Amino acid sequence: MIERDGDQPLLRAEGLSKWYGKQLGCRDVSFALYPGEVIAVVGESGSGKTTLLQLLSAQLAPSRGRVLYCMRDGATRDLASLSEAERRFLFRTDWGYVHQDPALGLRMAVSAGANVGERLMAIGWRHYGRIRETAGDWLARVEIDGARIDDAPYTYSGGMRQRLQIARNLVTRPRLVFMDEPTGGLDVSVQARLLDLLRGLVAELALAAVIVTHDLAVARLLSHRVIVMKDGEIVETGLTDQVLDDPHQPYTQLLVSSVLPP
Image 1: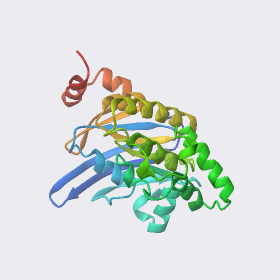
Image 2: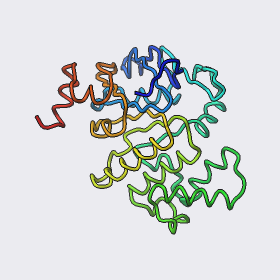
Image 3: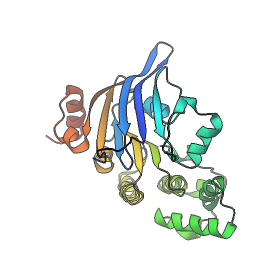
């Protein structure tokens, strides 16, 4: 558990609710995320976890409730009060967002190096040699051959694209990363390598992260705490090992028993 006495939450959800007309996305979700902490949001399809991730990352406006974020200057801001320019600035600096489909998080027609370099340019880097060198370093860190730096992502495999998307997001050393099913759709062997890579980078960079996944193995490997959602509401939350090894709620017990041997 990353929380310590006196710590200020990095991100805090208070009574978050979202309706799409009469359809519920999520209801009355409240929790705090602390610096360096990883929270996994788990549940079946339609449980509300993706809606929650979009609310937390200011891609959706809540119907009720609010999301508070601690800025680098220590001020806590309601995300709803930020201008569009301020939200874009957060995504260029403090935040990363890893999509399940890497094509949504990459520019597929430009080179791998340019994909990483663009994010550095967005925070003010201008020296081409330094940008290219840093992009090459990050490709190496995510296990992409430096000889592929000038190749476009559409020539990459699915696993390579996902690793490139991770490099693009982490090159600016954000404080918070949102991940939407980061291993979904990948072969099992590719998933295992990607999870090892993510676990190492999250620990090395002391990242805070919110990870949406239906895969409890991903939650166990990467997260400190788990939030279990059903029908748009939190049904159980706690330390990852405690929740997965000794679930209290019937729905969580069903989730765990469906993927773990008796």
